[in-house]
Image 1 (tube, rainbow, N blue to C red):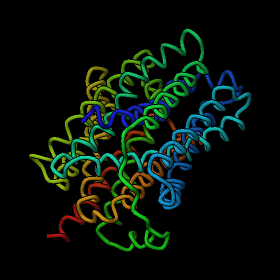
Image 2 (image 1 turned 90 degrees about the vertical axis):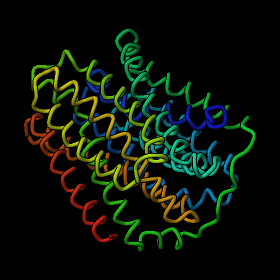
Image 3 (image 1 turned 180 degrees about the vertical axis):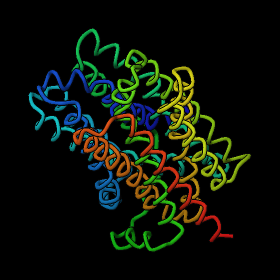
Image 4 (image 1 turned 60 degrees about the horizontal axis):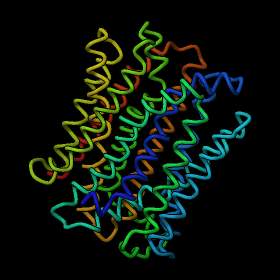
Length: 376
């Protein structure tokens, strides 16, 4: 399966590295661009908001072209945006470049996910989805520490340059791949009609809340650890978060294919995610590290059961619903990053951010429980 999906997985690796290495690059970027970390953190927010807006919109436009062409356009825009990031001389140029990269990611990621699900048997769908997510999480677990090491010796621009190289390699693999499923034409009105389905809308809302809680908080991990006098552990904790994400993404697919329903998997993951926030934010260093691992594992694993249940519920609308789900996830990340930036700029202590994320994940649990009760 990996031999079949490797170009899509490599593209996911590049997206994962791009989205999450910035948390460790914020101090160096802020110094270089002569601004604050909170303002540079907005680069994460605009990337994710651009992704969230473009994912469903461009998914509709992409059906007019072959899947290969649409994938190449997405990874191409993503790579050009990162090239502009690498040479950005000011904060404004940086923010514009992050918008371009986010638009490319918004076109590429949901189409890659839907394509992976369509390229394998139904019994292997969970594992195919988890492999695409694994590419994203491996980009965090292995790529982020390497990116931070590269930044320590050569500067943050070299780390972004690595992402550009990965984007070029992924585009090369997509261009040479044997075949991709033909896109299912859907008018924009039909894509919007997906949101009138109570089941789909409630699923997307849970994804949105999970993104706000998990990905939004990750942006400010360095500030949170600094407020706890644990700044020396930042690199280790980011690595643990990424390792947890890699483990969660790799094993959740088999779990939902063979052992757990998607709904039950989401319930368990949300409960554990809240535990991870509490440990990372308020427990001693050893338990905080364990909390980061749990947080990464459950945050990354949470997307696969949500995507799986949407694809299973309405296969003909899979591309649209997966695009909306990816959009909800990244919109949540953008909202979380923006709220975190606003909180820090308002002199709210960083130590309060994990508590805020814990409240949001409790809201997600409540909404998911209501959906399950209604379905019964």
